[in-house]
Image (cartoon, rainbow, N blue to C red; front, top):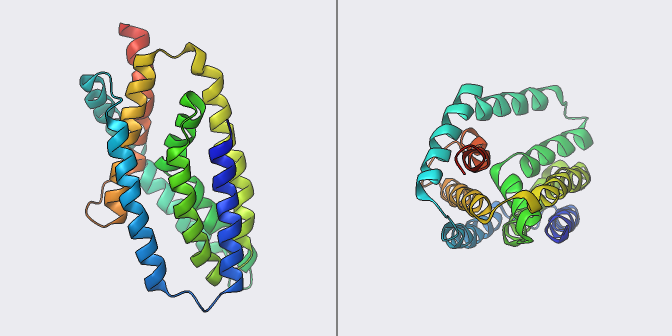
Length: 225
């Protein structure tokens, strides 16, 4: 059940170790190319998952309502403001805390962590978390090389955060119909595609402001069957 979460956690630990050992031997160019190449795999996972969508109308409704809720709450803007505020409080001497906070925000806050954990809990499908593990591993190398040991400790928060979502999703899975799971998966897959496109700098879509829509299929089928 927690296979994807454990792999993601270990990838961050290993990546941090590599970054600490080879602090000056890893160029930004290599790291950037690695992340870009893995985004192609992320796009493939997202496109494959779209086929599981049961009702396109529900998908469109989820996108619309998710955007309304997310923009109304200004989720992405609030997260960015919080991240800048936390970074501002960290002095150069507080490198451990700075690395811990920066890495935790990067690895935990985002659509891929939520969608991947939900898929693991509902379907036992760890593909998204495996892809996230590969990306986080590379990012951990780069972050640890510049911010130090604190990056490795962020793996604890990743384990707790993603693990909690997986366990909750697995608890409610027996009450979910095939249609609900299919449409939630389709919505999540669409967000994963957007993450890939954003990282490749093709689009600039605010995924956090759309993320609330992943819950819409639950309410739709509860109310309308």
